[in-house]
Length: 251
Image (cartoon, rainbow, N blue to C red; front, side):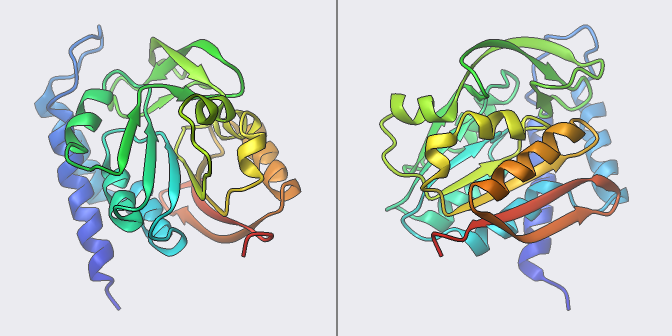
């Protein structure tokens, strides 16, 4: 049976990514013209199965509730942000973190008018400071703090999620969304206080980028009382999979 809502989310994601590619900066010696970026994204979407973002959106619809306080790490240009904002409603609050200088302006534009969304131009990590963010030269929306892979770099500010929560007076976090291209374990290491109260975690793991980090993150979540309740593996990239974890003490 065809899931109409899922297909609409995927189509919306494709249109958004093509549109976003037209706004990326030319600040790169490996600059790819907007029309070629758009062509690349369209062809990729047609040839390969769905990207992780619609999967994260689906898991969000299952795990999140109206009125929730959510932290989204790696918001990129706001595709998933829009979905989460709708789910949690006017009584909820979404803190969307995005350190990528190529994405932040688009994210702000795409979330304009969403009163329950707060955009934070910062990275989440295991320590506070300034680090090199490695950005993919073809699609500027993909960036990582832990892998270089021949990507260009931008210096960005990073903080522990525990400290970000304290700085912005976030009293309670019900759910955590992680799409951080291999930095999952480092982010969780900096979230020890928050993890005690979080009900659900949706995380995209990149085993090929940081296999040790993935294993360590899975072990950390298990020790903190989180149970893997759902998993979706990308058929065209088996090393990438999205997981939904539930804190068994919060059910």
